[in-house]
Length: 122
Image (cartoon, rainbow, N blue to C red):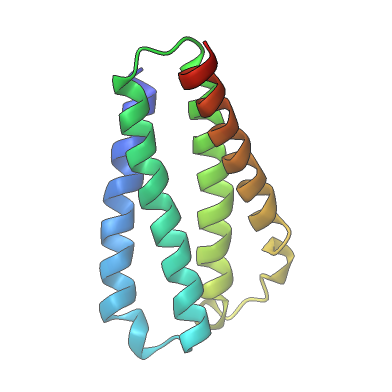
């Protein structure tokens, strides 16, 4: 349970820090499209950080699997978006990360489906 809490708190903290970075520093450097993508990564990291914290409070069997899908999905989804958004600053072609983003999204969807099954049907 402590690992789930750790990731929930860490994702929430990072999303606040990265959101502030995007709103203040990156706004001057990134294109509008890049900044919008970056903000999507921040939003999803916050949503899933909070979802992990809520998950720890719920008396559900098998919540470990929901957490695993949320954690790996968030890492793949948000981190790939961050790096893709920052590739002009990093001066690297990171387009190869493009296919990683939807894989992370699929993991998040699976996590939510499991969450529904665990919360409603068990």
